[in-house]
Each structure stands twice: as structure tokens, then as C-alpha cells.
Length: 181
Length: 415
Image 1 (cartoon, rainbow over the protein chains, first blue to last red):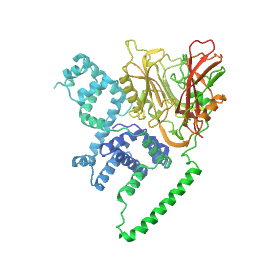
Image 2: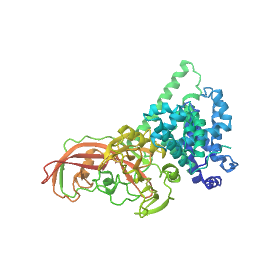
Image 3: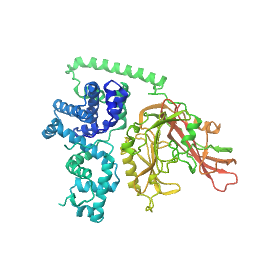
Image 4: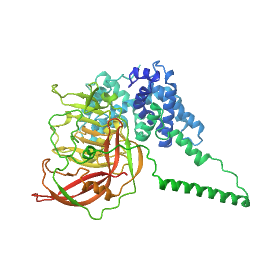
């Protein structure tokens, strides 16, 4: 799984170093917030849930152990539990049954984290490279349609997609490769 | 539906990446549809709470709980019979009136205590906020912005300026404290693809954290990020895309703004929400767009929160950025006539736009416009602030010059 924080930062945070926890916060706040926002009715509720997630993480960080479970997955598990607890306490919860099922499923959290990580890297590519990836993979369009929508030849679009995949691969290169095992 | 097998030339890892993109596409689509930008105020308040254990702003959970308690869940007392209720009502009204009277007296006698102390504005601060003349930077340094390479120069000649019927000015003005230096450097490789390790350097008593690829004797173009530890000022250079041989036109204005907003968002600024305050072409670089974005919630500032140069290929090649606002306070304001006295008595510098630095001829002119704008004031140890000031401007006729020029001056407007 992707990892963006050096183990020594986590180790320092576990020893009670608040500045190190601040570094973890800086890295993981956007994805924790986006996750909470997905399962909240409002921005305010998402902020509450995010604050609750990091407070619980701070209280429990000394008990975190890296047993193959990345820190981000551990954090998202805390966020998911907070969302589930909130839904139980609130009668007007925006969550559906399939949302709740997803939130209980660790493999879903791992996929969510992996998708977010890819999305962050995709956003670093030039605009036309992002567009070709979106049309081809998000919208599942055939090359002929991608070429028509982008106003380019089919060959040029394939070339662009090759370059986009190469750049994306290069962007990800500095980090751990997602485990497909 | 065709597949990607005819995409020859892909490595095994690139093919696996294509498979991952296809597998994760539904989730990525979901994530993109979420309004996932964290507000700067919330980000900073929660960080301060977690790292420093301080309640800099009301903690969101606490604030929400308090609001719910006050607005919704407070039990309502059962109604009393009318005859019993009237004396209670009169007594309650008397109490409210007494409390209001005490509050009113205390407000009249003493101005509200500001949330933080604003630093003293120096002559250097005032010059820093005035427009600087266009100059050519010959050697690029990581800690010197091409966008604002040096402060303005005060006009050296004698000016005789007059003012008729100045507006009174507001009774109260807002000041802002900016947040701490942004935590961008820890991710500089991932976010900006700068590979060099960050190092600390000291320039004029200010510590900077700098990461720089290229430049010097390397023969490679400069690609650098510098962050002032004192003020949070961020300077970014990327000369790799400075000259694009196939580009003939600058990027469309809308696309340039979008590129600037995306770049800022990636670095952790609230790029989507920052107000757009200027789009222009960079002087002497007709292919570059300059995009200026202001602080959210701040009406007018002399210096934008972020100024970026965007190349025709959408890449940001130069950026000058300040941290978002961390807190705000309200202060009493002096009248404009008092501020005008500062200009008349030469207590504050006046600059004249677009003239040579060594011109010293006398000139005469008047005030044409007075407004309130926040000026950026920096300190060595306590960060940066936006301090409310009066911005005076007008036209001046200089001796031996056929055309009038524009003069400008800032005077702090707080009591």
C-alpha cells in the first residue's frame, strides 16, 4: 500500500512528540476530511467528524503498531468508526445501508485510500494527460470516442495515454508500489 | 469496447497501473465529486489544538455542541399562570436592561480588547506594500521573488500635495494575523518534484528553508522552493518551462486562473475559494499570465495572498505566496484627516509610479482617492499580519515633465 510518511515520524509521534503528530496531520488531513465529507450531510458535520478522528488518533497513537497496516488505513478505520457511531446516535443520518456495510469493510477502506492516492498523483499531470485518463478509464470510452472528444487522431490519443501512464508511473515512483499480491 | 492491449510500448508496471486505474475509477470518480477542500481556518484551528493543545479558535466539536445546546436541546420551562408570569417578566426585563446598560457603559468607556496585538508598522513595511518599479533580475536567488524583487523607493524630491474635503473614514477596521509557515517542504518532492534536500540558510537575520535543483554551475535550470521561517513567505521558481519554443500565445485567462487555483490547492492553500483580484500579462514576458488571488474574507489588500506566473503549457513557473489568515480582530480607526497629516508632515513615504529612482525635481498635486486596504507587516519572530491602512493616491505634476504622474502612500489607520 502507498505510504507517504517516514516511519520515524510515526515513531516520534508514538513517543508523544506533538510536532511529529502535526506532520502526520498535515499529510493525512485532506484525505481524512474528504472521507468524512463523503459520509456527512454538511461541511460542518464533516469538520466535526474529522476533528473527532484526529483527537482519537492522538489519544491512541502510542498503541498504533505497524503490522502491515499502513497508518492511513488505521486513521480511516478510526474515521469510519466515528461516522458509524454518529449515524447510530443521529436519527436523520445521511447513510444508507450499503454505506454502512462499506464502512465496516477494511478492504473497502484500503481501496478508498489507494484511489485517493492515485487521484492525488493524477492531479499533478498536465491537463490533457488528465483528460485522456479520465475519458479512457473513468468514462470507459473507446479510443475512437476519446479521439473525437479531444479533437485529436486516435494515434495521437494513444500516444498521449502512453505518456500519461508513464508520467503517472514516474510520479508514483518515489513511493511504495501498491501491493497487488 | 477496445482494450489497452494495442497500447504497445508500455512496461509491465504501466500496464498494472492502467488496470488499477480501471479498477479504482468508480471510487476516484466518487472522491472527485466530494467537496473535499478543507477550509484554512478549520485546518489551522484543529492543528493548533492537536499540536499545541490550545483553543486558538473555538474547537469545532465544542462549538457545535454548545450551539446545539443553546438552540435546540435546552429544556423549555412550563408556562406559569398569567398573574404569576407578569412580575417575573418585569423582573427579567429589568435585569436585561441593567446588564445592557453596564455593557454599554463599558463599551463607551473602553474600546473592545483586540484578539491580538498588531505590530508597529515601520517605514520599510510601508515601502514593501507600495508598487515597485519594474526591474530586470540578473541572477536568480531562491529567496528573491521575481514578482516582487525589492521594496518601492520613496520619491526623493519635494512634493506639495493638497487635499480638499477628505472623507471621514470608518469607525472601526479589521486586522488579521497570518498562519505559521506552511508545511509544504516535507512533501516538496511529491508535490513539486524538487529532488534536492531542504536546507536552512540565514539572510538578514531571517531563517529560510530552501530546496533547490539546478542553478549555479550545474548547467540545469533553477527549480526551487524557499519558505521564510519568520513570516511564512513562500517563493517558488521553475525555469524549466520559462521558454517554450512552440508557444505563440499566452494561455487563455480562464485556463490560467484554473491552473493557478489547482496548483495552490495541491500545495494546501484554499485555491478554489481565494478571490481573484487580478489577471495580467507579465511585463517583458508576453507569453506568461500573472494571476493574483487574495485572502478569503479580506476586502482589499495591498499585496495578494498568492501571485503566480502561468506558462502556456499550464505550468506555474513563478509563485509568491503568503500563509492564509489565522485570526481576525477589530480595532478603532483614526479619521482620514489625521492620517493625511502624516503625509503632509513627511512622516510616511510617498512613491510615484513609473518614474526613475533618482528623480528629485519638485512637484505639485492633490488627493484624488482615499480607501482602506490591508498592508502586509512582517516581524522577525511573530509572523506576518495584515494591518488596516488608508491608501491615498492622486495625480502630481513634476517640474520639467509634461504629463502628470500618479502618487501613492499608505498610512496605518488604527488608533
